[in-house]
Length: 135
Image 1 (cartoon, helix red, strand yellow):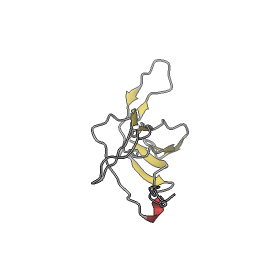
Image 2 (image 1 turned 180 degrees about the vertical axis):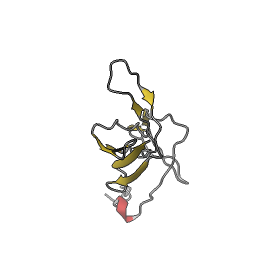
Image 3 (image 1 turned 30 degrees about the vertical axis):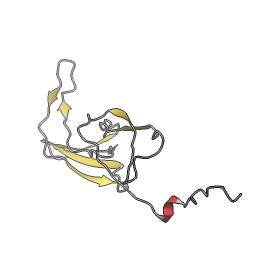
């Protein structure tokens, strides 16, 4: 009727949207969190309780499951592998432990050259490849 108060017309969000980004800092690595994000403007804070979002910081990389080994002269080996690269924390380093094939030998750190590698996959860095030279 004539006394009704007109409600504002709802427009699709794509007609006038704000794309925001906040960086949450001082979190522990390899940890799952639950968060809520509220937004505000000159009129006030968002209506209602924001949804809970499960998320995690960058995870530890998986151990290489398949390693290809190629002898490189009498005193060296090349090790090649591919592992999924955790988003937000690309693979940066590695270590090799080695022992002789004997029940009496023990594992010891191996002297290696700097790790060589490259990102593979999409821009998110889904996989990393590395090559080690055993000296």
